[in-house]
Image (cartoon, rainbow, N blue to C red; front, side):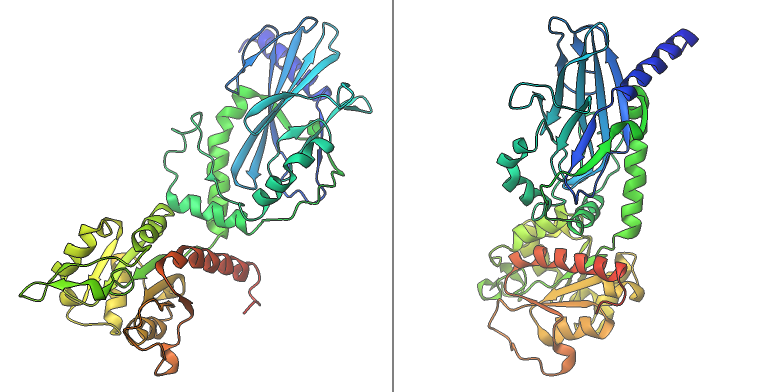
Length: 414
């Protein structure tokens, strides 16, 4: 860049900083902006940082576009929102526009006046979501959805991957998304809708949009690395088959005793797909014959989701023999030290629950079947958790991971 071009760019950023808006956040808003990318347009054209066109109404001589960066939206990692100040030839503000939920809206008070306080453009930011309105009252029609987003729906979006950064973030995994989801779920909050937290945008780092867009992928990776260091996750989910995934009462056998047909427990396939989509590492740890499992689980489309399969016929032992669980750990690159971050899900109190408990693996008993005893014969057969059906497992695993995070942040918790 030539010295004159650099001087012009510096002057544009200085003008943008001088006119930078003030943002009103709710009193308990946890996420504030940290960087701004500035573009100054002197003629109508495409926005440098958003998929829309910038218009010049009569009397508008230039438009300052603020691309505002947050590391966090309550529903996903990173957020970009926009404010546009439209200036006349004397750099006086004649119109204000801002982004909200993917759209662009004129910012006017109910009486039609510009949203100015003490001569500064002042906008209101939606709690957790950061969409802009010109007044507090304009936040109220969507308050119920905002509250839902900040609580039950916190973390829902994982890592935001849009077209602009898709190639740069191609290495993001499903497990990364899950880590971010859990991180944000732990930070869910009830918005106050009292917007007394005033934030002067001029205090954050300003630069050109080109500088910001070049910085963003590295910033996302840095934040993600911090989350992965702070947010504990389950390292593996071990699953039994009979009366855990497969309805044993529906099994049909050939003359050699191999299972040739069986139905799944309602919700089993959907559960496995859900866990796979969330990046859990799944292992089949089951007693039986290899060909039977290949026929039934393969036929129902479950087998491809397993990262490892430990089957008693191949191992020469049956649960609760510790070798079954240890072999699954080995296949997944884990060892006994990882046991507290592994779950075993099964229907058999002695084999699945007792075997897991002996190794310190988190035991989850599925009580769907009435075929076997529901009464532990000894203390080691008491499960850590109980579910009634496969569909309850994803929610329970999420609860376990959130509890892991609470314990890590406060080791005194039981």
